[in-house]
Image 1 (cartoon, rainbow, N blue to C red):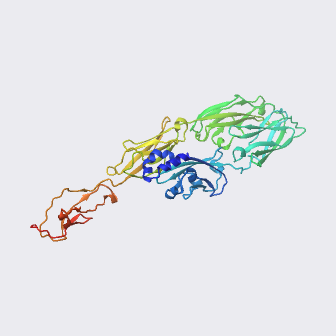
Image 2: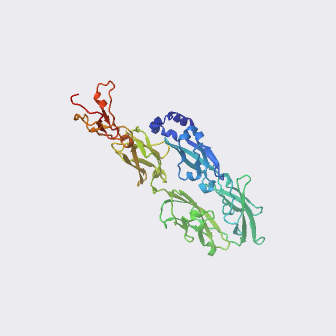
Image 3: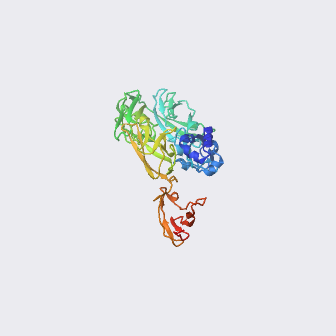
Length: 530
């Protein structure tokens, strides 16, 4: 890619040639660089030498402004226009910038002016182990009946760590004891949930309670850790746990479903009698707060309903642990995972962004000259996020897709004439492929600037005129006027008399013309007899 960039700079050594051929080679400017920087670096830390890696000479930066044009990236990074080095604009906090995304990559658009070039730089912010695992509760109390058989499982709340990858929670350790061992369940989102497993029967008459210490470790070197105290109270017999009616629950739900929509109903039964057989439902201990803000579980009926805004773009799938518990003195519970797949609907219109725009376009611009660079994005997925971009017809412009996804260039398709039309209103329309389709429009004004492409013309040509003899020298004998269709300084006219070098026409030597007004005066008195 660097070699392609250097070849382009060779072509563009002549500014005029570069301007004419910009459209043909503009995609060469879309060089892709990738840097990485650890979070928590100080403000002003150098990320990478963009100018050097793109093969830009210092003499190029001397005459051309270089800047960061991305929206959010402008707050995080800046570029030195003297040497082209990209710097951190503030102290970087990966967890604040990218939340818990596995890969934290910031796309930075860098533009060079005169002529316009856009380069794309990806900066990956690397995680450091700057957070300690912590449990939602410092203490967990479990009520376990003495008749519980070995192998009984009790899911605990997972420890959280704001770091990701190897720096997140990697393992758990249970304090030494003879009744319980620990098992760790891994879910698809790299979450590890501890499960307490009974390995030796409990005897309430021997010990009414057991105190355990659960420790969570992350993968740092050295690792960070957090603790939770588990108090196990041994209670008398309630020997039948609730049993769910299905082995699995999977349901499909459209995004934007209104509040109150029934998602699914789960049911469980308990063979015990009285309060030991009465079942209530609740979300499992591992359900995060964001999910509980979107869905409600009726504790009596097991019906799950919508209570928040369901947005496919936020999450396309929810896995919710539902717990069925009896009302016995020593509660027994069973858990089942309900999977809710969110179906995307076309609820986001495309967004048009003009990333670079030349407002004044010379009228002698060659066909193919780039006028503007346009990016289009649609937050929907699949066919709902596929976007087509076009402009209004009967204009001397066309819009071309680029090698970058959802990037377009607005270019001229014919020679312009300022004297025919001084500006154009270009309406850019972006339309997605959803059903029904959504679209957006954005208007830009292209001003055609003047070049000196018209010659002055006399209001009368040829001019026949008569003068009387014995005229007064210096007096005006004739006025001429001319007009130029160009604008500004290109339309300013000066007058002069063409003097013949061979001197045959002596008459012109006796005339003088005012260069600004076109008034012609005789420098002598003419004699008809002469």
